[in-house]
Image 1: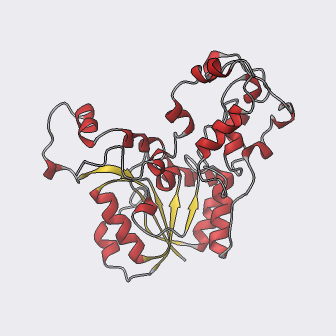
Image 2: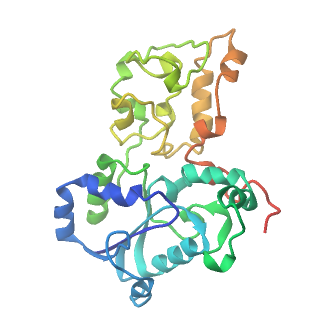
Image 3: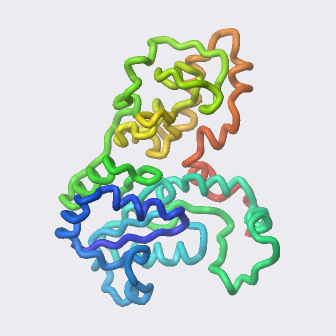
Length: 292
């Protein structure tokens, strides 16, 4: 089976995440032939252009679409691949870098560069960030920032065997703190993680936002096991259209009856908290419609 791996606009963590399989990656390499992975091996774009259409069995594309080059290669790899997999949160939802869709392209360039950069020196910086699905047809997604080893191993085994994968329950179902979550919670304010000493109980019961109730299970609650609340990188459950609204609803149900305004005012950065990974999906054409 021939596979390809490519990164668009991303931090590179998704490419490195394959190494989290440790020695199992050796078993994987016995079953596949890597025909394109520029992060790890010396491949050129012309190598892909020379391939026959559909000759790549599975392409794993990580990263979002932020430049003209990202979009061009995504379309080229789609043409050459039988299956296109959106690998990681950036490719699926835009992830943290999708927060840039809150600003105009010119604002971003002015913030990053101290002087004008001639356009011919860099690929065109697109007006807004796109997800992979905005550009090409996607056959499946492997979520996470980056995909945790538990999800990655399940997904790779399933893909190689032609099976479906993924869990359909919330992260709370596999959370190591679920037994400390009371039936009814009334909180008086929301704390940021560093503002309160962790008691080891359910984060929500402590007044700390944990995206577990609105996030799909599968990662084995790696962050919570390390005493950090879930930020939602695996994404929403299949039947939930918007994890942000789902989480806000969950918080609304645990606010003390007389403290609604106090609790709401204590939440810092709504977008960064509830839409940290999905802003690009929420704003698929950017904040401003009049930008060319």
